[in-house]
Image 1 (cartoon, rainbow, N blue to C red):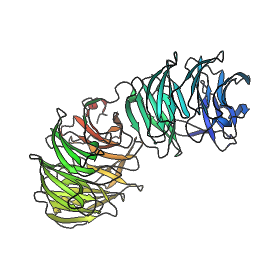
Image 2 (cartoon, rainbow, N blue to C red):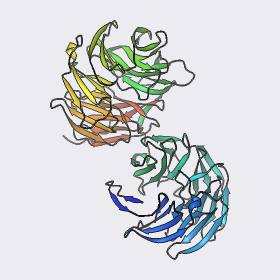
Image 3 (cartoon, rainbow, N blue to C red):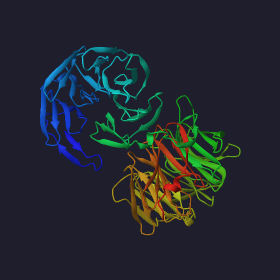
Length: 613
């Protein structure tokens, strides 16, 4: 077993158990001792100050199963008793005296989960067969048998007031019980697979669960409403636990990692949103704000049964849909407004693992461009729409998937990039192909023009960013600059600062990177996300004081761009966040997610927390 410092991540001590596996472990309330059960069938207690074994009992093999938290050992809140399952029963020890106090029978001779109530007067136990039992710790009397699960109980958790008990089960459900009457209070599906762990927050307002689907989920304890889905583990999520102050949430996984999540904002109103749009057709993969800031365009993946993935144009004030466009079959990757606001471009296809990464607006705001799979041409296509009539202005047929579309700031050109690895240029008014600028070694994941229209940036899965002369879009050219990360990583998105002197990128390394285009060097690496960073954006103010980022961990973060300080950590989405965008006035931030929603966040108080120049 290994002990870690959660502040620094440093390894404190290794305890030599002599076993191949340790199945369960529990801290003593005073933090000076630890109990464990292992693959050799031994129940042990350790003195953490010396690393010595101070208690040991044989024969605890029957309590284990291949995966799941299965908290098979637990100290009582006063630290006097140690509970563990063995041979179809729960043994209750005075571990310091090495004296068996009670043997509580009734379970099958397999895994048994145990948990003490906060006052230490009751003990809950869960069995392989799905039964949950409540016991009087002093007398050993069985108080209730709670029937509702049919599969193995993987984890048990008492609410902080002791009035509720939540059981997690292989049947994918969480059940909440009244510990006084034994009555079932609530039940809901906990994970998309086996539920393997459950824990209450110290204030009792939230429940955390984890499981086979690799996610950690947060629930409103009173209603069972899912409020957050945390992604990042690459294997099954096996266990969850809150810190005693409720500031952090820890999760462990079969991928060999322990992840610490910021839980501070889960107290009270964790959303801080001012408006939410629910896209009728399904997941939202892309978002673009109109040049005047009054409307947004969204698109994504169609729900089953729908022939197309529609594009929606929303009124940002009311949250109502102004326009619905036919979109592309299956999925739309990217959306961009023409600068006059009268056209929209979009891109998409049949299948893609990652969300859309590039969007921008045409200066007049009268057109929207999109790309996707074209049934009539039996291939990939980019579509340009007239936002006044809702009709298709023209369609560009492509051999490969187009992940990004971007209008030049002067509205003359439409630029596309994708699996064909080249930056293609088109006349925005007619759709006539102008040519290609150059190529990357792998697919292009991001495109962005500088605000002054002098430069174009393209980002690729090959880990490079290439800067092109946007004044010469009508001719082949070599890139002005090629930026390479100090470590090899896949870049998924890109954005210019308003003054054009910096770039921000996000990607598979779970970090946000800022580049100085004068020195052509990476100047910042902002860590805080626990999954891929799917979207980044500078605020539109002249200095570009803030950077927004979002991604796989379902969070939306706002950073001070010069210092790298994290200013906000918005939570509310329950799926991967595919895109973030500031409104033109910088007062609000929009985020789109695969949970099917677009959320609007108020940034009016951001100035108070922003460091002084």
